Each structure stands twice: as C-alpha cells, then as structure tokens.
Amino acid sequence: MSSWACTALLAEWDRCRWIWNECVARSKKAHRDGEKCGPARLDRMLTEARAVTPWLAGMPKHKRKREADPTLNYTRRGFRLKDRRLHLVGGIVLTVVWSRELPAEPSSVRVYRDSIGHWYASFVVRTEVQPLPATGAVIGVDWGVKETATTTSDAHDLSHAEHGRKTQAKLSRYDRMMARRRPAKGQPASKGYRKAKTLRAKACKKVARQRQDTGRKWAKKVVTDHDAMAVEDFRPKFLARTTMARKAADAAIGATKRALIEMGRKHGRDVRLVHPAYTTMDCGRCGARAKHALPLSERTYTCIECGAMSSRDKNSARVMLVRAGLNPVGAEGARPPGALLQEAT
Image (cartoon, rainbow, N blue to C red; front, side, top):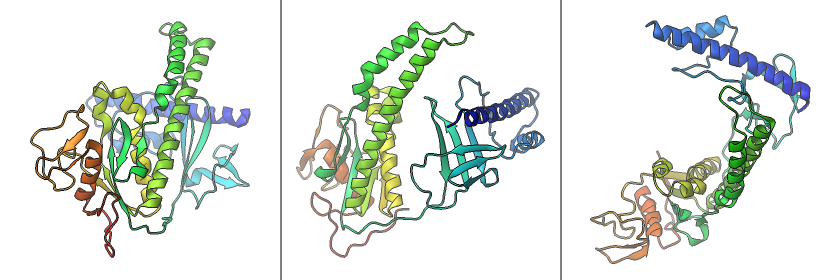
C-alpha cells in the first residue's frame, strides 16, 4: 500500500472515530440525565453528522487513537472495483493484492489494519454450495486437550500440534522487553517499546495462522471423506478457569470446530451438533450411563452393562454418532446401504 493511501485511510479513520466518540459522549450524557437514548436517537445523531450507518448499540466505549486498530466498513454505495483496484469514497484508491478471485459481486467491504500494521480488505459476497462426491461414510468428532479432535476413524484424529508451546520462549522474551520499556502512565511509548510490541504481535500472528492452517487442512480432509459429521457442540470457555487453560487455548478447539462447520456447509455436507452433556458417561455401544462422572485422569471407559472397553475419547466420539441419529456400522462409521441422511435442524 502506498504512503498516500495509508495516510488517507488513517485520516478517514480519525473522522469516523471522532463521530463515534461524539455519539458515545452524547449517549452517556443522556443516560446520566435520565433520558432515553435508543437506536433511533443515535441514528439521528449520526444523520446530523452525515453518517450513513448506525454504528452504535447499547453503551459502547470511546475509541482511543493508540488503542483501537482502524476498521472502516463500506456498503455498496461507498466503494467500487475498477481495473482490479478498490475505489473508496473520498477519492481513496487502493491497489489490492488478491488472494483469490471473488466468486460474485460484493455487497460490502471492510478495510482494516491488524496488530502488526498490515492492511486487509474483506469482501462480503454471496456464495454457492460446492458439493463433493458422496462417500457413504459418517464420522463422530469429540474435542479434547490431549488430542484436539478424537474421531471414530483413527485416520482422521487430530493430534495436538502445540504451536503456542513451541513459541512460548520467544513470547516470554518479548514480554520482558516490553516490561523493561513500559512507559509511565500518561506518557507516550518509546520506540523500543513499540518495536517489542510489534515483534510480539508478529509471533502471535504466526501462531494464529499455524492453528488456522492446521484446522482448515484437517477439516477439508474430514469433509472430503465423509457425508455426515456428528460434532460435539463443545464450549471451551470453561477450560479457561482450569489448570489446563493454556494447553486448551493452544489446542484452538473453537477455531478448529468453526473451520469444520464452515467447511461442511461450503461443500453441502450434513453437520450435526451434539450437546456434550454426559457424553463421557454414556456407553457408545449399549447407551448405558455410568453412575459417576469419570475423572480426567481416567482415560479408559468401561461399561458396567455390556462390558465394552475403549478409550474414553473414542467412546465419546461414538456417542456423538448415536445421539445424532446416524447409526454407524463398525468402527469406521460406514452407513448401511441405501440409508439416507437428513439435514440437521
């Protein structure tokens, strides 16, 4: 991006931030005075300021120049594509390095800068389903910490890549650099502090991209080989309060789950989310439920009714298939001939 385009975008961001902060100040004043300041009044404020989109909802906070990364949203009237360049209102012309061709005409675009200073343009387009050949197989997915994903197929288990642990020494070094150069309250940051902050942001960005790449490649393989997936609707937020918080965050369960769901919808596969309650207590063969919850240290599940014994996570993955109504046959989860899959609701 040219220096002129970068300066123009930052100037536009300054104007947008000023309007945002002005509306926040008026909204808080009205709240203190006991007046109603709903979306309609905020819309009138923005209309008076010649804004197009109502940006505010609820009680937002002020955006500070050094703390908020620039983010500019444009609807169809605010941009156009010409000669593979992005033209924005105000005479701003951006030369875009395209990662892929747009499948359809975009309806809006978001131009933003990330934590390391790189600018991106994210387009909203209408997409179509890209169906894959039928395979006649289904799979159950259970999320965990020892392994990111345990499935009913041994060939599709996703081991813990530990991208964050491998970069922890470097991140700790940058944290110490920032601590030594941390500015006093109310004082601008030094050049050394900003450099250390940028280095840390680059390392974190690399880890995030590694996790995203690993999750997408695994999701593509699972979606290609199976017609339907029974996925544990796992909420990893509670793990943040446990001793495994760092390892759970490094596993990137949420990002991997999101990649699998998006990949399944993109290719028209049947993705069924299963509630995780009691999945570690139920038997994947007979459905009997244990009387007591298994501690995390116990990694083998033994059914007291039918005597089935298997890995704790493998049993949970089979429970996903049973609860989703896919009725697998055999360890690989192949559907009976002629069985039909119904779209999950």
